[in-house]
Length: 309
Image 1: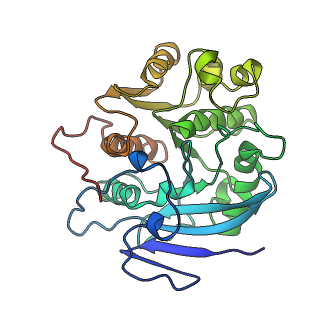
Image 2 (image 1 turned 30 degrees about the vertical axis):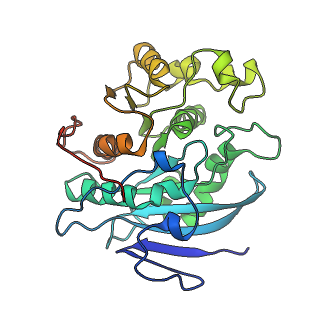
Image 3 (image 1 turned 30 degrees about the horizontal axis):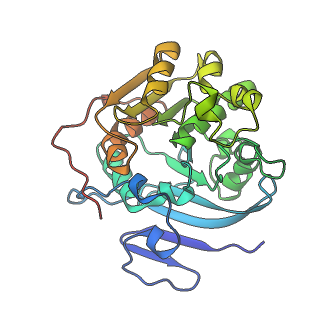
């Protein structure tokens, strides 16, 4: 298998082809990780707070019948192998690089420095199929359930759980996908410890869902978190959405029905700037489910700013 590996951290990218040191964005060197409005801007870095580091490799997925990127993001200077693992799912039009972009690495570094228990995030290219087998030859959910564990254990990670991530998180399409993944894990009797959904792509009626990759009403209903939410009753769930997001009405509906452990509708739209304001809460929520912590999952300061690169 042909595989390319990159390491991102400390303001440099190193890998095959000797990419130039000093690059500030993995996306700029490789490929855009998401539509520009959805990219998380990097906030000013506090002194002596290192950004997280990300590795990028190509792996061959039989479930998707193509090579996909495996992006693993973890604390700088820490052996990632014994860390709990969260699976990170990207949004429509994006890819796994979203979880290793500068704004994400900055936010993770700040979270861990503030006391959030450390964990690694493993992300894969899932395509635009809403993380389910929309096409017969492309099954991103099977990739997550059956192939990711082997890729993690081959790298010395998650061996205590047989390669299974213990957390799940996603944004937009990936937010819905994270809920679908949590349901699949619960069905297999190996539930995740927590799932965090950011601006999840939920739909209240077929006329809207029909514009997304679903084969028909039955396919949508079978994969609709607004219908299968009772199956996640035993899984701690956090949910965030901006009040100006087009998904906000459906997210409010989910919150009313499912009563997740933590939920917040706050000022913002379907943008990276909004995601930047909620990431501290998302990471605190995930962290408190892998290790005890006194960190509150509370609103961030209204003065917090996340200027774009």
